[in-house]
Image (cartoon, rainbow, N blue to C red; front, side):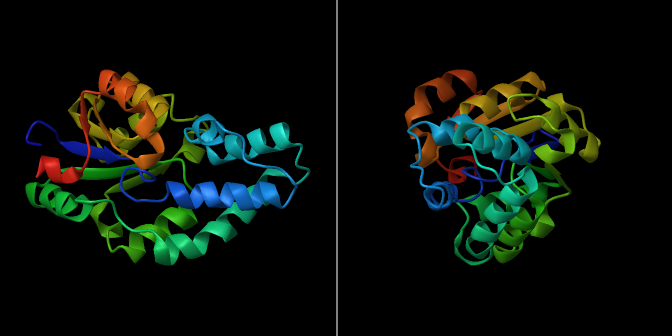
Length: 213
């Protein structure tokens, strides 16, 4: 960690165990319209902005609600879980503490919404660790582009080449690499089938933040 001035973290599947919650929400939401979850749904949408995801649902499943209504419904369905149930992945808290002790700046770069990210960070008592928070809605581009990582680095006032980025899915690792930063991929159950490619694309693949302590 001494080689980096800043660390940029993804949220879902990287810092928190939340992907199964979203699978349940997708199933319940689509079920309310009489649809079943398609096989590759999570892989198709997980790197998109919230607006892009809502538009994807509108187009693919012919949902009549407007984009804002869809996002509001998702936030309502997820808020209880993010406020109460969703926990940190193994080793997250001691790793954040070690970075703080070293004076390393930290940022969050997420496709999630502000209400949900604030709820889960505060419920797990880690909100104060982050010097900057950026969502894909701020730059209107998905995570297979480098823009969210470039903006995160700018907010921290560091060069992207001085940053270490943690992500858990292929598209986001590709986008993060385009920023010029060092990128570590972390294991998540939802992306376990992508492990081989993640190992090839990233600078390092880890199963837990404990490996870096």
